[in-house]
Image (cartoon, rainbow over all chains, first blue to last red; front, side, top):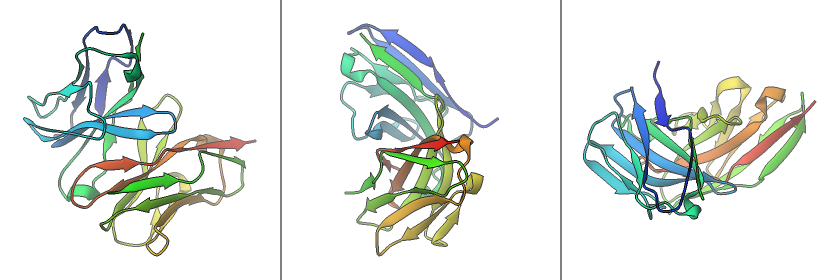
Length: 115
Length: 113
């Protein structure tokens, strides 16, 4: 089944404790992206990647890091989490064939709470 | 710069009555436009997309949307609401020059029996 998976689905942590949220897709998509969802703000893009070893900042990159060492994986790293990073996070992927016309497939989300 | 405005944060309808979720966008380029739906505790699912073909776009579950360039609108409609339509809906714009999506703030649809 074609899908985007994220782990963990739920995470409660404390300020300053490094964490990684994993994202993996099995559709051989070139493009992957991370979003955060906050009430009333919709989804905002954190980072994206057009292919292996190619990453770029989205709208809200501060406090986050990413890497793209393999095509299928795109982990999100919070080196020193803070309470304002409490949010619902989504990973997404899409093919770049036809560029902007293609649907982005979303993972199930990771709910992060930073105390 | 591009932006998306969903004009209603909450919409409440009775089961069997029409649904209208409003979306306006601004973009310097010819946009691709999408509607996504998010059911409680679920990820986002594509409802439909506009990619400069027919201006009236049909999606899944009986939803459709009409692209009106003169009004810069892409409103989502459904003739008859079902209880299972209760969810949050996002209008999304995508510049043709890239794959970045800009999301509206979302509209929560409530369906009363």
